[in-house]
Image (cartoon, rainbow, N blue to C red; front, top):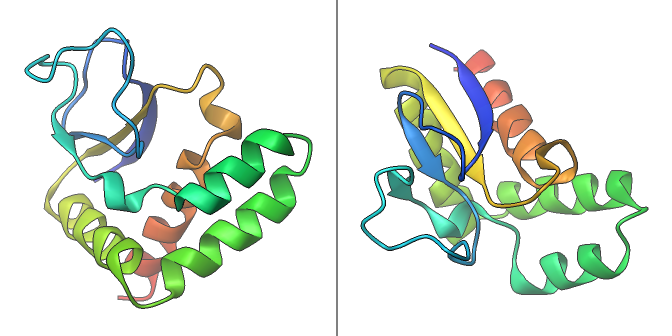
Length: 119
């Protein structure tokens, strides 16, 4: 099992899950490049808004997002769902951001891999 990162506009891999809170522009709801959509795994609206205004503070965003994922609620439930999907096979986390390396996805991959390692 592997957890990988992709842009939603690329050809899909196995186990693709869109993890953005907002639906990507130019993509129909029935587009096969999407796979599943687990928007609750994305950062909260407040954190996402803060990060877009402070793109130079990725480390602070990373820390705050990990805290959101660890707090009981919809984000933690979505993380657990992604962990279960990763246990079942390959998982590809998709985002519409132009630079996936500076999106929420690497933090989400880290959280998934940490839970898998501690299981």
